Amino acid sequence: MNKQDKAPLFETLLAHAKRDVVSFHTPGHKNGHGIDQRLKAFTGKNMYTMDVTIFPEVDSLHDPTGPIKKAQELMAELYGVEHSFFLVNGSSGGNMSMFLSACNPGDSVVVSRNAHKSIMAGLILSGVWPIWVQPKIDQNLDIIFDSSPEQIENALNQYPEAKAVFITSPTYNGITTDLQKIADICHSRGKILLVDEAHGPHLKFNKELPISAVDAGADLCVQSTHKILSAISQGSVLHFKSNLVDLNRVKKVVSMLQTTSPNYLTLASIDMARRQAWLHGYQMLDKVISHAEYARRRIAKLNNFYCFSRQEIRKQGYDLDLTKLTINVTRTGFTGYHIEDILAKEYNVQVDCADIFNLIAIMGIGSTRKDVTTLVDALEDFEKKYKGNQKNWILQIPSLATEMVMMPREVFLSSKIKRVPLTKAVGQIAAQTLTPYPPGIPVLIPGERITKEICEYLLDISAKDIRISGQETDQLRTVKIVSN
Image (cartoon, rainbow, N blue to C red):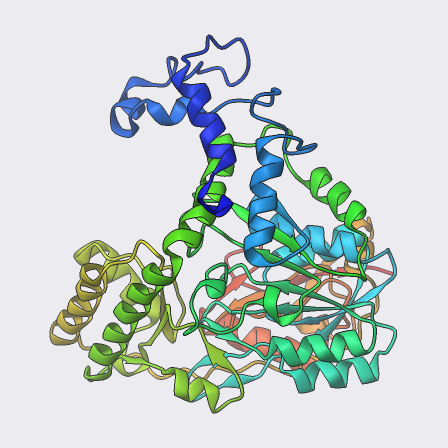
């Protein structure tokens, strides 16, 4: 038997549960006995017997010496890295950990503007200067691409003092950049490569998928094991493979950012997801890819929906995770938000997210042919029943090459914050993040100088009733700034 066949943490928890141990430890439901009967009637009682706390038999996430240590070692071996850390607060915690592990206060990091919102938390906690790279927008496909190798090289040429580069790959749309080339660019200059691969824990397990960050040369890489593989929500992993980052510092940071009461069922599910990927991942992903390609072929025959192909993405110098379906809705006359709502209410189909232009359907190893058939059947029926007259929007953003005056951390801790009319904000230092959806990219970030172009853009989209994350009133009329 290969040792990857084992699941040391799950097996330990299962053995403990079967012993029916009397609990005088947290949590208070005591092996499920205290769980509300209506909840327990639906879930069953067995899961609660694995909801334990830290004691020697089940090990400690913060100082693992037993089954958690063994489970993390198996994860590291499978992914070909030096060390893997189980995370119970998702890849958001992993992203924060990467900044705090790789950088000191005052360091600078090259970051693409379309990074996840947890990056801002990482910048604030670590006291790092961000060097923003404006992502490329494709107005034909209505999607955003992450930083290219050329953009990263240009940024490092312009800012040679940068300590690290932070990349998001795959993006929400499943688009991957050339991580191998970016890794070569970074390491030839002694720069640390940090990768948010939250949407790519499965890439390692099928040759039809783009290369994973762990194989491309990332120093630190976070993956959401729950997003595509079979861990339950919040189950993620941070991988370490570097001679530029101190492993002991990573251990301290990860411990600092994680709860002292981790959910052991989440931890066990990470352990089992690794075992499952080892045993069946290739075959399971073969099926998922086949289902996704089947959906693309059927969607291509529809009149008002469109799903771009891998070939189209490769022409742009990028690659595509075939398990992701980005369904363009611009020809329907409806926004993606409207269609998402109809799919959920009338067809019992819930996509992962939507914007004005697209629906994003995320496939996972639990996705079936029946699932994608139901989705495409719903789209076909939608075409027959609904005719919209929404005008076509244009995916665009203003130039974001503005001056970074203060670190986000300085702004966050400042007491000199006030609100001014957006019409009078030009030249001021922003004290809040404003992110229109679409395109889902922050056009205002704490510490930046507010330009006339950005003000005009925000006024324009707020007048069009486009949702702007970060606004604190029904309509965006004012903005927070750092006062003199």
